[in-house]
Amino acid sequence: MEGCRRQRKSVLHREQKEKELAESNVIAIERSELHIRSHFSVYINFLQPCYLKDWEMHVQFKVHGSGKKNLHGDGIAVWYTKDRLHPGPVFSNNAHFHGLAVFIDTYSNDDSTDRSFPFISAMVNNGTVSYDHGKDGRSSELGGCSADIRNRDFETYLAIRYSRGRLTVMVDVDDKNEWKECIDIGGVRLPTGYFFGASAATGDLSDNHDIISMKLYQLMVDHTQEEENLDWTKIEPSVSFFRSPKDNIDDPTGNFRGTALTGWKVFLLLLCALLGIIVCAVVGAVVFQKRQERNKRFY
Image (cartoon, rainbow, N blue to C red):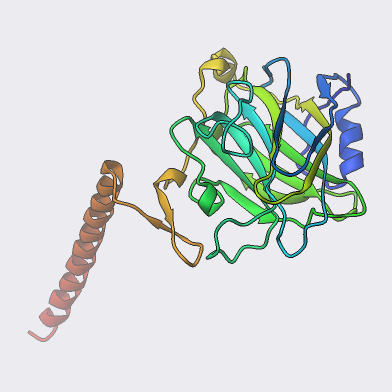
């Protein structure tokens, strides 16, 4: 068991941060090794659910193999889900999961993409969205970054932090002993009482996926009395977006275009149009009045 202390706003050095997190109240550590090769799907589960409101997970992993020129796959996923992991099509887990998934995708299934792989992305699901494997999950991702993590001569690390509704994903994959931000997004709602886990999968190609350790820390954060009174186990996984990821469709350039407008979007458009008309009317009235005053001077 190790400890943790109050979260700081910015800490770059990975070892320094781990030391700070471990200086006081230890919450949980799970150390395990997951090794997978061709044509296999493997997953590991934490035995107990997590009831921490604010937490940070550190994953030490290694992806390696003999495949060259993208002839390898598929990758690793780290999960925080309502149920323990079960065999399925999304990196060896169920496609319609409830909770959070962070994918370390080493193989591009979309020939039209201009992304550089391996690519790390995150997804929050309430069981209604299906991960689109053919598009590498682009229609449902919250964000991501490319990361050169294969066949490195040193260990690679991933950090996932959830605190006060903000999800941050960081990596240390350059042997510089410092975290580099990959994803940072607010408005994320995750319940307590879910299970952490990890999985890895390969398809027709082969690779080795080693999870060396997973360490979970509590972040000591003050919450309002209203937040403390909430039943955090009843929170529905969600993200506050002006445009929901599941309402987006990929175009060939990699950008999103909206689907059909929903009712509240139509309302906002009408409201903006009405405000525009009012502003134009006011400006027009002022201009008309000034012209009238100018004309009176000639009489």
